[in-house]
Amino acid sequence: MDLIPRRFYLDDVFDDFMSRKAVNGMKCDIYEKNGDYHIEMDMPGFSKEDITLETNDGYLTIKAQKNNEVNEEDNDKNYIRRERSYGEYERSFYLGDLDQDSIDASFNNGVLKVVVPKKETVDNKKKIEIK
Image (cartoon, rainbow, N blue to C red):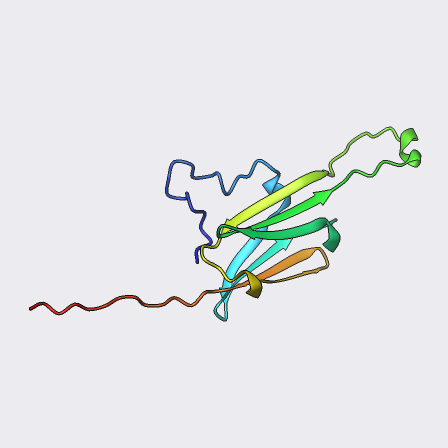
């Protein structure tokens, strides 16, 4: 299992780090503890219902969507500055061969926590005797 993007050592060094869909809104910490990988992502302003996690071909993808809800009371507002962003956010991590059923996720106080158990590696190495 590897949390370094698959193409990290190739020409497209920043593709997985700099997603075109607002990575800046999805900052995270990744660490290893007790034999598991942990991803903690700050997602202020989102609710649990706004967030989806998917696995596909060794990738864990975290998606979130925040809609700009406009109501009739907003029609008379003359904004001086708007810094809060709305839209779709997406971030993917390459995990390799993973056990999809063992991934655990929780969301509390604007922080998404994902625990991905490391898959046990089987040592297929065999020593061959020279005759």
